[in-house]
Image (cartoon, rainbow, N blue to C red):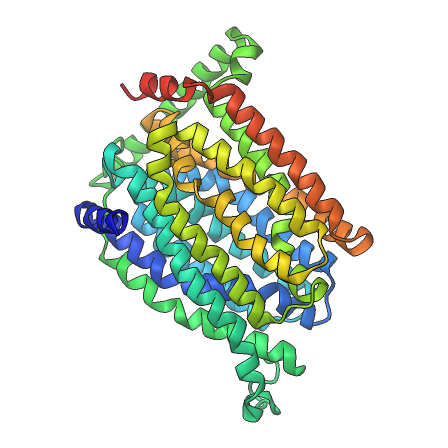
Length: 455
């Protein structure tokens, strides 16, 4: 209980924007959990195979990749509150398209649009929390943000797994649709049960907007708010001139710098780590629900319980992440826990026993993701404050682009060769990412880098 009490006390000390952000994530997490369990199953129930599922996921990550750097510039320039609100609106509209459209092209377009909105949510997360906290608060704030989201996601996954079964038991919901809804609702009972559950998930997310509107609308300190059109023009011209000057100086420094210094720079290494991790994750993570339901024979309700249990364990372990990082160091804790998850992942991918996979799945996810908050803190601390938005864009771009490249590849491999190969290749990529992270920041080097940048 002491760690829980410590987190509750820390929540009371957080700044108002940080507390409201946590509440919003808790409210939207239920929707995320339902979608995670059901959306791929919905596509397969419509008659699409893993290769098309991978193409839809590719469209989403392509949209995210296209918007990553514009999102980073907006984060460094505009209010985080406004970015969160408008990105959430776009995701809501695109999500409705994903659930109501049945044909390939509209599904791909709506997935791309959802990816654009998701990019802004991803990029604004770490800089917004960093700006809304003091350095001593950040390990607890970032970890609590993940825990709150995971706890709500667990509820959504358990609910999402059971909802289609309950919906299929109601004849009036599975009957002929009214003429004004016939274009939207699918006819197959299983596919409709998934679709109705996903639409309900979208409605559940609506209250998450309330905390966003209650946030203070503060702009980044390095930019002032013009009071007139002429001042805006002067401010804009000055900003663009400063940007061109900064780019010119960066190019000049790059020309004078040895490539070795660039390759071992903290930003380059963190981007490479994110790229390798994204490549590995894209191969198998999007297909876990199909793997359990179609390959191992689990029901959607059982997978919802398994995935919910995984996120619940992940939440508990994430609470302990700051404690572990404080004792052995941020980098050591990240490398140790993620390395421990790789044998578990391989066992899950190579077994045909549902009970064994069901037991190992929560352990793998908990070990792989418990230090995610610490990684976010570390990735922000190795770059100067004024470049954190752009740095986070680079991290997310590396991860999302890598994910986008390997997700459709994973679907094609699964459709033709089965699941084992994607798990093996992912394990190799994960090991390369951990080796790069440890090689650059291990043995206390990470602490020395952050101390130099944040004196």
